[in-house]
Length: 66
Image 1 (cartoon, rainbow, N blue to C red):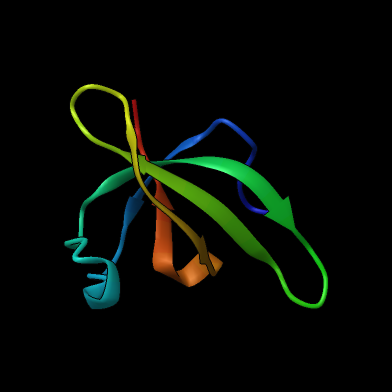
Image 2 (spheres, rainbow, N blue to C red):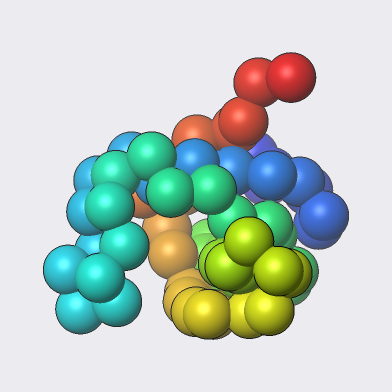
């Protein structure tokens, strides 16, 4: 497992179906290891309201360095 719950991430490539650009910042809210490693990522607007919640693979995200 590469990431942790409540860790901030950045998209490595755009997700056109969700209108999210590469570099969009999200938060890991759930981790699934079966049948393959995926992460449920929540994206929010500037007010904190959830705009998207997607399942992404490790190669689609990177750790947001502090």
